[in-house]
Length: 147
Image 1 (cartoon, one colour):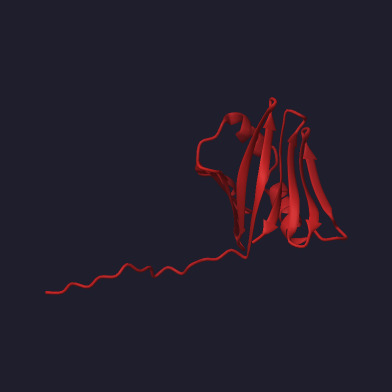
Image 2: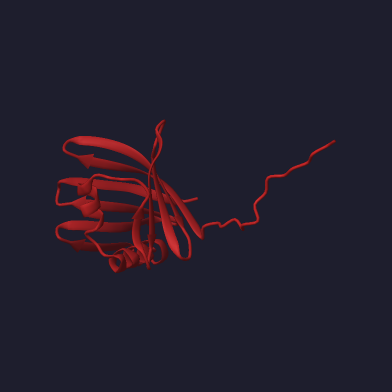
């Protein structure tokens, strides 16, 4: 008797409309950490994956206009407070501006609230930098390039 089997999926693969990868630096209390960030932009949501060489994936953040920010792992409450500083409409406007409207003429976009600044700057075709700064307590910055 011969038994044949197959592993397949009937669900359709979903590919992002845009995909970016980059290196980011977190500076806090005179300590510096480097991370790799991958951002996949879909029509309904954005997925941000943060990883570190050798350690692999550390954090996955999903953002959508309807649900706001969803984090798949427990994080320190101070970081959660920071992420909750901006509401989902502010994040949506920021993300849309950075991923869809930056160019050589409109080369920067920034929102500031409660001494926290979120900023992106055009660096060239399909490349931009992002800054997330909390009143000199910490900063996250890096450059993303479209894959």
